[in-house]
Structures are given as C-alpha cells and as structure tokens.
Image (cartoon, rainbow, N blue to C red; front, side):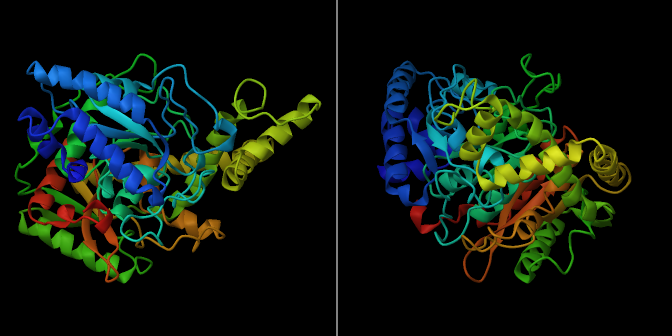
Length: 488
C-alpha cells in the first residue's frame, strides 16, 4: 500500500472514510516512502514512533464515524517551526540539539485539525538561501532530477510533497522560500498575506517579512492546509484580526472578466526562454477561460533585491543575536572570556551564508550607515508597495508572472556566487516587501524535464482570488497531475 502516500488529500479522505485503508496504514506508507526516498535528504528528523501512536488514536476516531478534511492526513513541518518535544534545528549546528518546550501556533492548529506529523523537513540554515544548499545537514535534492536543487529555503518541504512522501507540508516564505521551491518541484505553494498566519513559534529570520504557508499537489489541497493555519493569534501581535474565509468555496468558479496584470518588468530578456514560453502559454490559457490580460508597470522592481538584502539581513542580525552560547544552543568548549565565547560559539554554530547576512545586517544598522542604507531601503520598500497598490487600484485584479527567472539549476552551480543566487528571487521578493499573498502553480516543464511555475500575486487579504484563478487554470491543464519517478 506504499502508493497511497502519494495520493491527494481528497483521495486520502475518501479512502479513510470508506475504510479502504486506516490512518495507521496511511502513516506507515508515508514513513516507508520517506525511508525509500532518504537519498533526497528531505528530512532532518523523522518522528516515526510519535506518528504511529497518533495514527492509532485517529483510527479510534474514524471507527466512531468522525471525519474532517484533514483528519488522519500525514504532514511534514519545516524545521524552522517549533514542535513540542521534537528537535527543531533551523538546519543549523547552533540549534542542533534544541528541543522546544511548546508547539508553534501553526503546528497546534494542524494538530487540532487532525493531521499527523511525520517529521521535520530540511531547509537552508535559518531560512537563508534559494537552493537548500546552506543546510548544516546537507543539501536537499530535487525529486525530478537529484543532480538539481529543489529551491529554497523550504526545499525539504517542497521535495517531500513532490516525491509523494506526504500530501501537504508547511514552509516559510521571507523572500520567495515557498513559491520558488514550489516552482522548482512542480507543485503548488502559497505565501499568505503578511499577518494572515501566526508566526508564534517560528524561529525568526526577518520578522517583517516571514510568513508561514503550505505546499500541496493541487490547489484544493493547498486551500485546505491554508484554511487550517490562518487566523489571529494573541501570541503574535502581527497576526491580523480578520475573518478567515472558506477558501474552498471559490474553487471552480469562473474567472470570466478577471483582469490579469502582466508586469512589463517581469517579462524581460533575463527570463530564460523556456520559462518565458511556458508563461505565455499559461496566460493564453487564462485568456481562454475569460480572463483579460492587461499590461501593468511595477517600476521599482529592479530595486527590490537590493532593498531586501539590506532589510532582511538587518532584521536577521538582531534576531540571531540571541544565539550567544550562553542561554541555549551551541556553546564552544573551553574556558573563555565572554567576548571570546560569543565569537567562538557563533563562528562554530553559524554557517557561511548566515554569517555573511549577520555581518551585512550589522553594517547597515551601524552608526554612520543607518541613514544611507537601512532608512533609505525602508523608503524604497514603501515605493515598491505603492507600485502594487496602484496596479490593483486602477488596472488589475490579480497579477501573473514568472515565479523564478530560471529553471532549477544543478547543485553547486551558484553556491559560490551569492549575487547570482540572490537574483534567483527577483520576482518573488517584491511580494514579501509589499506584504502581499503570492502563489506558484505548475505550468510546464523544460526540455530537460524540469518543472516551471506560474506566479500569481493578489491584493492584501485576497487569497480567494488567487485560489479561484489557480483553480481555473488547473482545471484547464494537467501539469499538477505529473509526478517524478520517485513518486510513482
């Protein structure tokens, strides 16, 4: 029954409710698939014993006739999200042995919904990366071709779904870390509006940008996991007091008359030819469904990467100051004065990319450079947000664009060139800077068989239009049904 792990939630739900298979069998199949796919390095930790115990409890509920959309569904959690009693490392040596005493709000919500966590997913260290090569526990490999990256920082989360290990996973998105891996792995991934989902219990990278979201095989499954994790949380002052709509109600609705904005700054020569061709075909499909393509301009797009790599490292340098070798986390061995202990513990515990971003962040916040860099970047961030506001106010209802300018690249191809790596997120970063919801859905493959993603960007708090648009596109194509050989 190992193939049941790669089913969609709807098919799992039908199988569980009809007693075609039990939750214990489903979880066992998921664990077996994780084991047989271990070469992909998706997981930092697999919670087999806990998962099987929870499955037995859910089988008892199912025997009583209980049902719910996510009851008994296996899930994987990105290793930057705290799980009570289960090691949470952020893929960093500095937190290699950290066991949180509490669950993150999103984990608690998924437990309440009845999901079963099978483990913690590999990622770029502290969510800093676009390829999942910055993990202290080794790179994740793309299920479509293990020589290629799965995207980052939520590479393990995306690869686990694509490989058919579990139907849904959680990731985080600070500058594209859900949408870009979703694109690279040929699945659906959503970054909700900033404030839609609680960040309580999520190990912080850049607090004004981080947001939790879900990965899934299709739009409906993504809507279900998003529904489960949204909502205000008194433990997170940045979570908004807004009603959470039923995202599944808009699935299948017509998009006739929907104005789809096409930013001229996103369809440029820097975009790979095969990506450009796939995007144009996707827009043609949307037009065939009754949508109206409209050219728009987001004039400050070219400043987004520079702004992000000032603001995000600045916030990271503050957030990561707590890892000092004193309170918790890695502590250098030996007898040192306080300053030396700090330096040695952090040098040993943090990887190269994390150290780079901490130093950049400290520099732009330092006396004499704060106004020139950090303050100016905040002003340009406002201009980037204003670009989107004006486009949505006067031109369009949703924006369609490439998720990434290129297809997945080979492991090692860009790791020694930070600038080339950073430019990989040029089309996703603006969405985070503006606090908007963004989604990637599969829209094709390159000639070498690697996935391509279509990015949809919505108005603040308007995830419904993203789900409606993505659902309509999905119903007219079959890209979401494709699976790599590892998932067969």
